[in-house]
Length: 170
Image (tube, rainbow, N blue to C red; front, side, top):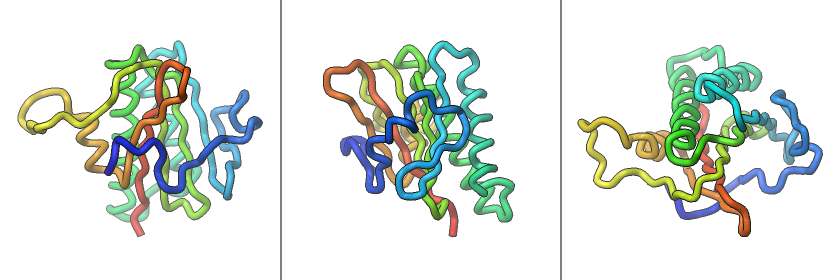
């Protein structure tokens, strides 16, 4: 798992203009059969529960929920936890999140989460990780649950996008 690579394998890459501009909080087709959902969080209140509810709806639409097995249920809970951690980090360290992007590949096997914010900081798991101490576990959790994660910055622009990818159980 890497926080240094700006893009992961299978990155959604630049979105077609129509999928970005005024995209509703509903499914939009992405490149290669990917399903993409976008939620604007700029100025919203209660962004963590709002993000979890939005993600839960996407998981239902993409067949991750309702879960048919304990493994599938755990995978869906992992997605919700990672969304919570990334949005919470944006709230605590970056003046709040701007957007939440969710995308799922055509086979619904890999789900990508992206949270954009205006913060300048670089998220990283706390080292050494101290499990018994409160706080500071967010990126450690993300690192442990995800296939990969990282940070994307656009040159000349303030802020960043923190992305993470999770795999559905077989």
